Amino acid sequence: MGVRMVEPVSPVIRARESAVALARRMYHVRGRRAFRRRLQALPPPPSGGPALNFGWIEDPLRPEEAAIGGAVKFAHLRARFGEERRRFNVIYLVSSTLHLVPHVEELVAWARGEGIPLIWNQNGVAYPAWCGGHYPWFNEPMRALLAQADHVIYQSEFCRGAADRYLGPASAPAEVLWNPVDLVHFSPAPVRPPLNVWELLAMGTNHSFYRVRASLDALAELIARGRSVRLTIAGEFRWPGGDREVADYIASRGLRDHVRLRPRFTQAEAPALYRAAHVLLHPKYKDPCPTVPIEALACGLPVVASHSGGMPELVPADCGRLVPVPDDWTQDHAPGAAEMADAVEEILSAQGNFAASARSWAERSFDRERWLDRHAEIFQALCR
Image (cartoon, rainbow, N blue to C red):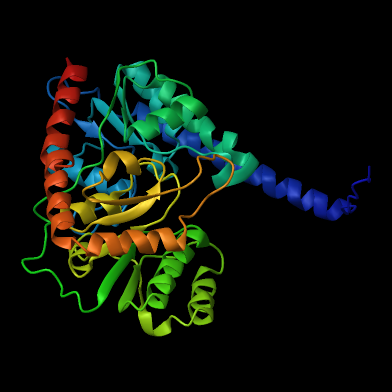
C-alpha cells in the first residue's frame, strides 16, 4: 500500500487561507444576522386567502421572459396568485431553485414561529452519478426542508421515489403534480413542416457532454442510413469547455452541414423552435420531470428520449419512443445511437398520428389551469 504524499504548505499561505475562510464565515454570519432582522421587521401574516412568498428570489421572471426550469413554475403561480414580499401567509419553495433563496434556513425557521406554512415542491435529488461523493452535502438542505414542509408536491412519481431514497419519506401530506404548460402559448403549428428534410431538435440547458453527444450520434446514424436530416441544438453548454468540445465533436463526425447551434432561448421564443421540428431528442438520463418534453408534446412534437427518470410517466407510447437504458445511480447512460435512429424512423413513418396524440395527451395531462386550480385548493386548505 503506497503512502499518499502531501505537499507542505508554507505558514504564510496557511495564514492567508485561514484569513480568507474566516472572512467568508464572518460575511455569512453578518448576512444571516441582517436577514434575521429583516424578517423580524415584517408585519404579521395576513388572515384570509393565500398571500404567497417564493423566498425573495431575485429578478422575478415574467412568463414571456422566463427560461426553462424551475423559474417557469413561479411565473405561472405569480400570474394567478401574485407574490407578497412583506405580508404573506404561505411560503412556496422549489427544490431546484433553492440556491437562489437567501438564507432559506432562517426564513423557514422564522415562518414556523409565525405559523406560516411551507409548501415544498420537490424536483430531483443529488446522487452519485451526478455529483460523486458530494451528493449527501447537496441533499442535506433539501432533506431538512422536506422534513419541515406542511405540504409536499413531487413533480413526478420518479421524484417521489428518488426523494424517498436519498432524503427520506415526507411526513406531511404529499402528492404528485406533473409540471404544467400553457396550452395556448405552446400549441401546434397550423401546418407541419415538410418532410423532405427531417428536422430534429435538442433543447435545454446542458450540464454534461454525453447528452449532446447522444443526439449528434443519432444524427450521424440517420445520415449513414441515407436520410436527409438536420439537427438544431438550442441551449447553453454549461460544463467547462463545453462550446469547444461540442464544436470539435461536430467537426470530427463531419456534421457541420447538418447541425445548427443556437444560444439560450426564452419562453416567448420556444414555441417557434418546437413547431419547426419533426421530433424532439431528449437523451438526458434520469431527468426527473423536464419542462422541454412537456412543452414539445403540447406543440404536437413527438419525443425520443431515455427510458429513465420521469420520462415513462410523461411520454406514453403513442406520443414518442423511449430507448431502454440500465437503471443505475452511480453512472449516467446515454441511449444508443442506433436505437434513437430507429425511434426517429418509426415516428416519422406515422408522424401525423404521433403529433395528434402528443397534443391530446398534453391537453389531458399538463394543463396549466388545472395545475393552478389544484394549487388554489392546497393554499386554501393551509390558510384555513
